[in-house]
Length: 454
Ligand code: PHE
Image 1: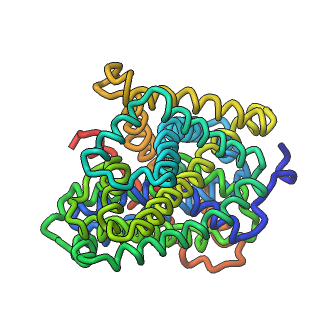
Image 2: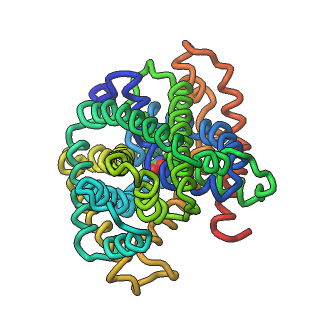
Image 3: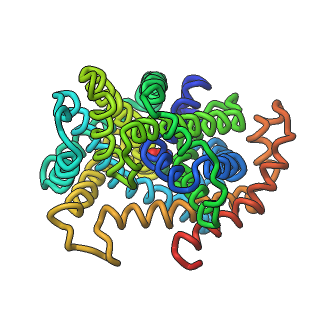
């Protein structure tokens, strides 16, 4: 495809909302509150903020530079900027990571649809804690139902992707993101006005520095990468659709602020509601799919209509947040197949959707009937999560910071960040310093830690 014919996002705000849509997802609403709760509350949030702004932001700017400069999908971007070098493998790894993440992320995204339905038919009403545990276990290990929802979710994602960059990704982000903000603010306000909500607020916001260990730093950095969609070229693919007037630094800052804001609000929904009924926040999927339905019933037990509305809204929120992220994951592989293999966009999207359905089926089954089939002690679902989030993303982030910090010509970086000299260059030096030294060292630490080498 010629550079000139390539589609762009129609507006700056469209670009910001699309990138923010990628960043805001299950990582914010499920993972962030739990990590925060277990790592000393406000102390973790402070470290997380440092990670987002000192590491996440420069790497996001690096990915934006790679994408907009090359005007190519992640797979083609490194080939265009570093022809004839092995750097192209960083792009290929990103495409593979996106494909694999989608293969299990869509399973959890599918669960949100089941829970919207359950909440919608008032199925949570009158259930006790044990029944919620049993219901989740029965559902997630069922051989058919989760797969049905997985397929529905991926087809929804597919439908938006085939509509294209402007009419699909940009338009859906412009609608979904504001709805998501409204829902999350309403839910947070409701949750914070529950009796005893202040205990939850204290748990989330009162710094407990005695809990700050090396592990907390590394946990905060890992969370920042996953949550900001960094390390696999998702944002570089989106940046390839940025117009030449898009300010990369401002866009990155907006995405960082929106992502952090949503994560903190998610904490403000979950903890006050949980503490209000004396439930300890639990880990992993159970917090969202077992503990929370129970919390909603108990917290608003006196007013069944409120419990009903709160539950439906929460799962709709979760599904929308997951959808804007699955769109971005799908786009990475679709754009690659479309641009590098010459498939039509529709055909490329069909291949990605079909491939993800197959991987998704195996990851879903690995939580039920295929539980015994493991590799390195992990089923498909856990293995995909481990290999992508804990190996491929840190490696991708590390390599992209080295690529822009050390390989790419400084003038190219300056040109992109200042939009050809029309914006102030002050931030470039700071950004380059962070990319050259701070980011590679910090990511190496996360990487080594998560592989259990330290
Ligand atoms: N950032 C998304 C979330 O928080 C997950 C994601 C990771 C999306 C990597 C795209 C790429 O849920």
